[in-house]
Image (cartoon, rainbow, N blue to C red; front, top):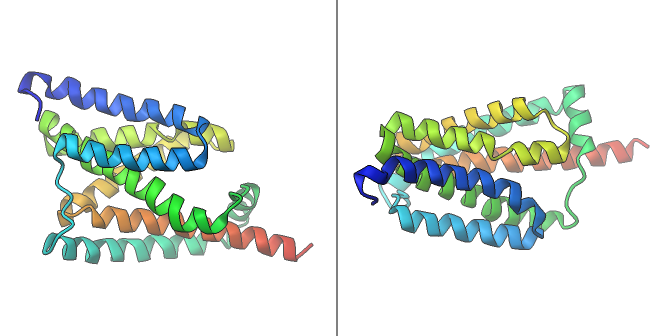
Length: 212
């Protein structure tokens, strides 16, 4: 734990580093990006001594809350695939060359674990020590939103809307972690959102090809 004088600079520097990494990482190959992000997430957890809550009884609470949030989120995403503008947006995104690797490895490990460990665990812990629990949650949510600027630009999405939506999602993921005391809760919700979005996009693209 940093000296009290350095807690705020440390938390803000960590947030800035995570946002900065989001602009550098897309230049790497998918394999290297996934490996480095997952490894850095684990390293930050160790450095900040952030609690994960992945043992009973907190794990059980996290699984219950995360499963409920994940089912609700996935159901909402599935419902939106019937909206024409959403279908057009999904159809425009080219899936990775290896879909199984994307669904079974890159999303769970390179995105969900890496981001939850870095933002909801390490940064939230550092932020809470520096600014209190509400301030820590707000800091990680803001950094999480800003870390999606590069992705929005790469896909041609609206940058401001992307930052706002992902920032709100980051705050909600933080709430799930705090409420349950376990990182399992936001991990399950995050996983459900990303997997449902990926499967929805694949389904929309396939149905569009079948109609040609």
